[in-house]
Image (cartoon, rainbow, N blue to C red):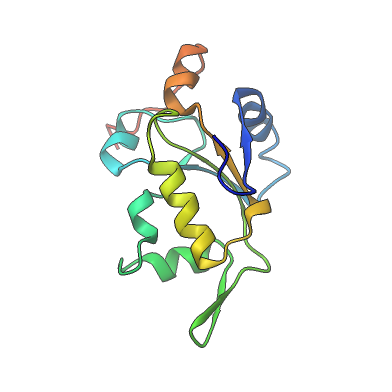
Amino acid sequence: MQIEKVQTIGELEVLDYIQSLSQKSSSLLVDARTPSMYKKGTIPTAINLPYTLFESDTKHRDTVLSLLGATQRKQQWEFKNVRELFIFDSSQWDFKASNLINHLIQLGYPQDHMHYYRGGLINWKLAGLTLTDHSER
């Protein structure tokens, strides 16, 4: 599945990203699932930005866009210095990551700054890779 010009990636690219974290402070691994799903287990180093956060009328959307590096000029968003995002959800049959990506594209987020790990958490687990559990936090 391809989402416009957003690059689709696999486990090896996600692992390369995690290994390069000390050199790439301007990028984020994003779990697009709900907070309750995120707490039960996610890919190490991932932050939770639920897909619903970027729907038009959410109360924290503008704050999160600013934290990602976007700036607002009047009613228009500028995305010159935004973070590179590696976005995933549960699996290729889940649509939370693609919804998040489509919301960001509609806002003007540059597609070359987003990567879509479509295999998601299910493929990650099937490959026998480590999960981080946030349920006790």
